[in-house]
Image (cartoon, rainbow, N blue to C red; front, side, top):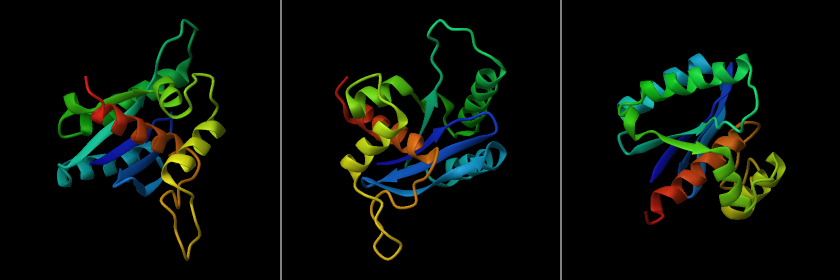
Length: 154
């Protein structure tokens, strides 16, 4: 199972490719560059699932940044070879899956991922999360949660 996961943002987004239980590629890219990457993966890797962190409404007023992020979610989804198959993963689901509480913070999610997948390691001895930085941690959380949802009985 291979998953390309995205933590979308207004101008740049974190991304991660999870395969065989390890983060094999990750980073943070400007949205236009990530859109090109998604299109390329979509055309060449039919064995890959796209999972995107989805925005949820909790009754609070939102501003321009939220709508801009939602717009990018739509663009990434539409660029995929099968937009209907794109998995939408909510942040609360990531926190519940990895930390067993919706109150978890980013640091808790990062530590849960290290505990589950393995440490980053060093350049000479890279671990399964080597190279994951910044918003790519959130994308890795989306990937791990999506993988769990795909294998969980309905």
